[in-house]
Image (cartoon, rainbow, N blue to C red; front, side, top):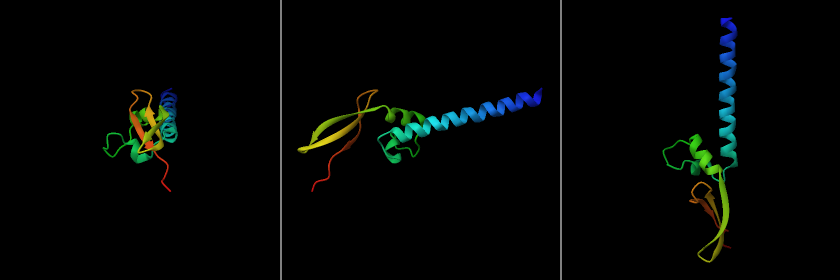
Length: 89
């Protein structure tokens, strides 16, 4: 009986960790930011919270120095995450 409980605990732990890392990977993949930009507080680590915050984003067109640029912003609070402008020719 103890063997079965230990096996169940091990399988549950492995599945839980796999689900966590799969969710984290999806959040990082779906975010419009690079790995370095995902580190919102610039402490050298990207947390699940930072990845989640950046993955819930919208896009809007803005004017920057007479250029049409795309601003990526967080849905949570509307703050900008990144601005992408076309390269000047």
